[in-house]
Amino acid sequence: MKKLSLLVLLAAMALLPGCKKKNRASDGADVPSGPKTGYKNSALAFRSSATDADGDSVAIRFDWGDGDTSGWSGLVESDASVSDSHRWVLADTFETRAQAKDAAGTASDWSEPFAVAIIGGWTRTFGGAGDEHGQAVVQSADGGYVVAGYADSYGAGSGDAYLIKTDAFGSQGWVKTFGGTEWDACYSVQQTSEGGYILLGASASYRADFWLVKTDADGNQDWAKGFGETGWGQGRSVQQTNDGGYILVGTTCLLWPDSGDIWLIKTDASGNQTWAKTFGGNLYDCGRSVRQTADRGYIVVGSTESFGAGSFDVYLLRTDANGDTLWTRTYGGAADDVGNSVRQTTDCGYIVTGTTASYGAGKEDIWLIRTDANGNVE
Image (cartoon, rainbow, N blue to C red; front, side, top):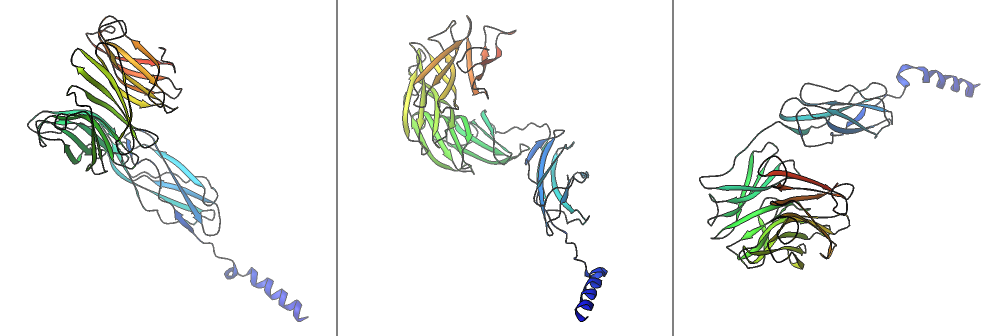
């Protein structure tokens, strides 16, 4: 009889309001993840997730920082990711937050903010009383930009290599110059895998046709290497390769301006030469752009006076990983045609741009060439 009474008492207590397990709120949504920069009126996608203390399903919403808040998402499992997108109509920096709500309707606090810089149209100028020339630009990992070229207004000589770091809005951060008492220039820049920068140009101060400079993330020089001493050669394009080294292309000239060859140099991660190849004929041939291909070979574009139909033709050159020629192609007519930049496309073909005097509406026009994987024009 006592045992039965105890069971009845326990059952009755379970029905009392104060004896139900209290629902616990979600631990809160994670800080949203997504792009750090974007352009106004362009949709940007962000993600967040939340863990519920009771293992309940959760819904998530986003505060976009511009007075607009998304609606709640559908319920998802605890820890599952939710994505949403937003378009900002003004250029500014906005703080995006996420909030979670469990299946019982209990909402968490807002997460810590994630800053998004929304960019509108802008122009910037950099320089002093002398002549400054911008030759290359890349977007850095933080959403800003790095501009490379050469400057007369600053530095140690009559012209120095010039490196400018900006934020996403083009506002100047740090500025660095590299060079000696004579003329030095930079024509190509790329951010490296560890966050620094690799520059390629030419230096009269250091008697280098190809002048390779490596910096840290703040633009401070780590090392510099020189290749060639003719005084007429010029390094034009550099890319970090899959092995952490660098591939360089430009022109080496022994009898300038009568002749020159494309010069392709591979270095290790410290800038030490591992091999070098030259390509061309009896006249003037120059390399302007190089990229490593999907099979770890290389594609080079420039111009050739030695081959083709005109005085100068676009020259496309494909090599294996050791720099040995697989094939070459020329494109052009009777006038001067020059290739300046090349990229491999997703289908392993190539897109080339340069200048044509043989075709187009004006004396010289921009020329865009699309080829298949073997360099045949499509």
